[in-house]
Amino acid sequence: MEKNNSKVIKADGYAWEGLQRREYKNEDRCYKGVHRYSLLGEKEDEQQLNFQTRYFEVEADGYTSFEYHRHPHSVIILRGHGSVILGNELYEISLHDVIYISPGTLHQFHADKGEPLGFICIVDRYRDRPTLPEQEDISDVIHSGEVLRKIKR
Amino acid sequence: MEKNNSKVIKADGYAWEGLQRREYKNEDRCYKGVHRYSLLGEKEDEQQLNFQTRYFEVEADGYTSFEYHRHPHSVIILRGHGSVILGNELYEISLHDVIYISPGTLHQFHADKGEPLGFICIVDRYRDRPTLPEQEDISDVIHSGEVLRKIKR
Image (cartoon, rainbow over all chains, first blue to last red; front, side, top):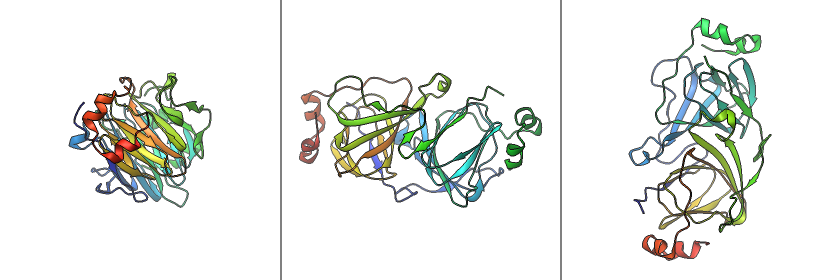
């Protein structure tokens, strides 16, 4: 059998021992009050995972950037309530809801229920970078007034 | 942009609308009181995910099979307390703890705290089948009396 690199990373609420809470993104994009923990798949001894498991937390009234990319997301809500734009649709989301974000779908998470919104998000290790849509891209896809009013850019 | 297959699967506690609770495994292996939901990555319209996101729940006093395989696991505890064998080590686990199970590591989850133990487990879509170890494999790896007493086969 192979070298055993297995481990347990202890949690304390919505924080993890030995893992640093980071800013959502390094670049300045249009988002508000978003933090993240890289849970598994980034460290040297975790390279046998082909995917990365991250935890994102959006502060009350915060939102992630409105973007799209080729790689899909698998998301599970771990904390609170909020909403998510998935293309032309707006969904209410709460604890343990599962969200599939398919390739190319414009999306944005909103912590719009007066509380933090936290979620696990799993992605391929090798993936394309997100793109911020042009007004044209948005007009092509989104016709719902409710969604158009919700978008933060 | 591409076809939008995105979706929200609503949760009700530790169950998900439209998803069936299944038995842990189809074969008769050595486990007790384990159920699973396939959350994302198995359905026809989810094939762009290279990984699968599953939820497992072990009833109080239950345990998963004691096994190993080439593919690693990324695990996050979603419900309760329990313990996990990772090779020669035994760890207590509780809500939001993150567990990395490296390739080839013998492992087994135990709901040994008088309550159900539930966890998200993410794996590659294409992966090898688990192997149940021979006594020889176990003797090679496990010297801890505590772990040896804990193993259920």
